[in-house]
Amino acid sequence: MASLPRIITVDPSGNIKQQISAATDLMDRYVAQIDVPSANFALEEMEIQKGNINVVIAAWEAGDGMQGWELAGKLRQIDESVRILLLGDYDDTELDSEMLDESPFIYLKRPFNIPQFIRVLEAALDGKDMRATLSEPIKAVAVQENDWGAIPALDVAKAEAIMQGVVIDLNPLSALLCTRNGEVLVARGTTDYLNIDELSLYVRKSIISNIELRDIIGSSAQALVFYDGDEYDIFVLSVGMHHFMTIIFPGKDGSRQLGAVSRFGRRHAEDLIGLLGVNAWAIQRAAPTEEPKPDVVRKSAAVRLTRQETEAVPEL
Image 1 (cartoon, rainbow, N blue to C red):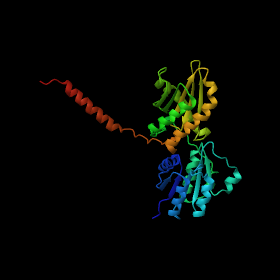
Image 2: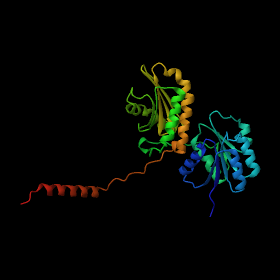
Image 3: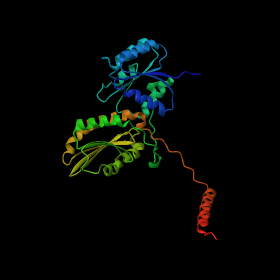
């Protein structure tokens, strides 16, 4: 019997372990996952597990004052065969194509292309060429609105902390986190001045359009929509395919916030996506419902009719 792939995640923030767990669940794969908070712990674990670790997935800022490329070199000194995937944040180093081709690791940066990320991870787990998957074309799938499946669960307590960060960074009137169905999960700031439930139902069209356009612009597309009004200016940012963030400013003020919302709003949206992991982009097709057989329907109707007639007949 083949043994389970053994992986180590290295991330001081703890986000990568959640992303990989969500990805392997989505892929329906079982792995032995060891999560460590920094580079030195990863090196120590590699020494202990020498020869038994298949993949290491690390943040570019790997902790202990060590960057990903340094960690990758030390990991390869311990085990030349270990496959290494480094995940960078928005502000992390850009690597040119020559360096990427010659490096002993694969490097992906936010915002991640989720189908590509899944392919790279699957190749790593299967011992295949991860680099070859980067050039494979991405096939998007058109999905109907009634075929989007369940909205993935979200840790609301952690989401509230992220949304509070939106308020601190942007100082809007309010910031909302909603589902694609218009349900308000988190509301921060002042909300007494408008009906936030009604608002979320209207602006949900933005996230719906994002899903409908995925076949044209790519399945991990992100949307930023701006509504310029006299009383209020509203930004809507997609959070994966199933959630969206609404940020509200006083009228005539929002247009000056476009740069800040694009920078900080997107960053917080990515943090929320990190909570959801790959499920943020997953659309699970609903199982087809089987129409009831005509004879069953007729029989049920006959039974109901008989009971009604019986109740209507007075006893003699």
